[in-house]
Length: 293
Length: 297
Image 1 (tube, rainbow over the protein chains, first blue to last red):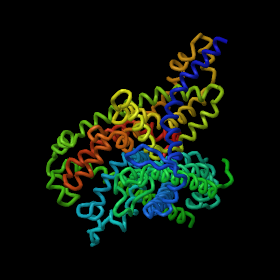
Image 2: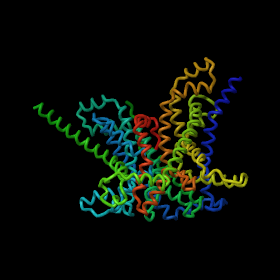
Image 3: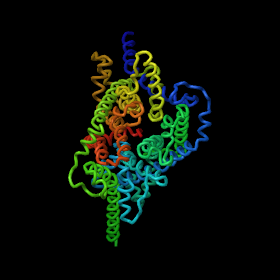
Image 4: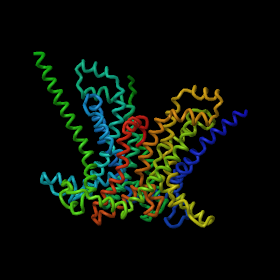
């Protein structure tokens, strides 16, 4: 009996601090996102007034909000396709071929992932600078005029490049790890049957690591929503003229835009539901029979 | 005839290999050149920033670093970064290690529920909840002002460290629990028979075995705390109390209009150098650890 109460005391001391911190700083704020979205609360006055779904009705007519959702979706699709596509192909090459300096490439490709988004945005502002930028100085060799990389026309593309630059190494190293687990004899027997490297990639490698691709895809989409916010707020602050604004930044900026906290949290709820919906759709669309090896 | 085709196949194989090397090198260049360029630019004189971006500096102009460190307050930001990161890591380990151990290896009422709750926490990104956290702390401050006569929650580095640690809990507990649950139960049983208590067993026997996982946890969270800038900018309103990335962003936006490139690039180097040095020392742990922590975005 005594040992039982000791066990309870031990478990309680170990688990309680984590549960308390998690509840105060994650569960309660998450609950508050949903609760506050039904209230009106201005930036200066902590008075909260229940207004039902009015915040959401206002959102439907807010052109900036709709634009920021479109930009977010555009960034998600483009960054996901480019990062996943290239990371898979490169990982396929690096694991299948016996190359010298593999470790060097692995170390280099991972570097962007450890840098702060602020550092990356500093690096890319040097690259995208109109007069003294690296990109325009290379292009001028081919006789091109100075391109406004952060202008309204190209700003999304510029963000996509920076985000792919940051993410590609991480996913490559991860896919290399899962591809290395595919048994070699599958490739050997298929090449005896005359299969080329490309056929092997699509018929053996991809189907066998499909579960891993699915999981990473879901997490990639969720993290891209978040990374898009970090990149946009550091690189362009949503400008010019909201051309690169994304929903999370628009939510964050409500404090200064005067929309109030209730309105900001309604945006948060929409992004929350959007990200879950999108993950569910992607999860369903990529469903295949699991192959075992 | 047969020899001829294998020769041709070999030639094709060689060409293919050269092509692969070319592509890989190109990608490596695309990553390394901008990083190296910023380092070179950080020792350029102001006038040299207006010439060709590819020109090398005539001499090493350390003054940029002195200016960044003193005038742009990078020294102060560095101090805050080191303090907050260290504090947050300590809090995180002290809270997460015992919790993950109990959640992974003991059966008790509510354990399943807690495991699911922490798993669900993996999906809550801190950027969604940073505004409610700010509101909670600012409301708390208003309350405390009435009782204590002063506000202590906002503009407090300790609170920032707690928020960092708390929001890192789900990922950390997930990673540590998945390690703890692989250990056989014999270790504890032997220790209990020898008369060791629960705490002693956990601290003396189990934690030392988890060292590789603990290192992975420290690495990943060091990177995310050191590079963080949204939370600190929201919860700390006094600009000179910010950390390196937040201060640097501020400097970048200010220098862009004043066109003082030198100190700005020096500041960039100050932020990324500690991370790069650490990465080169521990890159094996990091790239291996990430197959375990593959869920972190």
